[in-house]
Length: 68
Image (cartoon, rainbow, N blue to C red; front, side, top):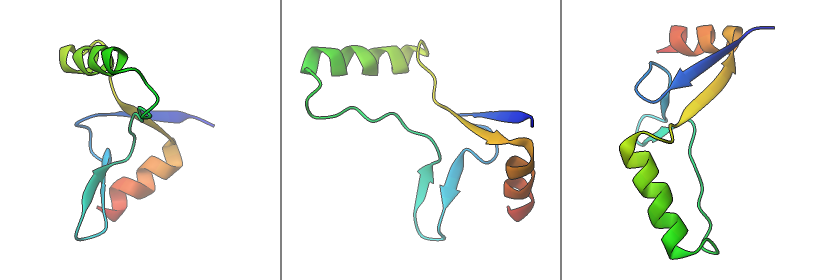
């Protein structure tokens, strides 16, 4: 089985129910995370040092793109 990595900005990365649009993958930072760590994570995201990606099988990705 082959996997397809979908990066932020690629087709299929966002998902919609017709009213709302969201990202298929996300990074959750819990409230227990210290503020200074949250700030560093946000800084890393802003600089592109951390990237958000989603993984699908090639078949899942093909069906996803066909539906759009």
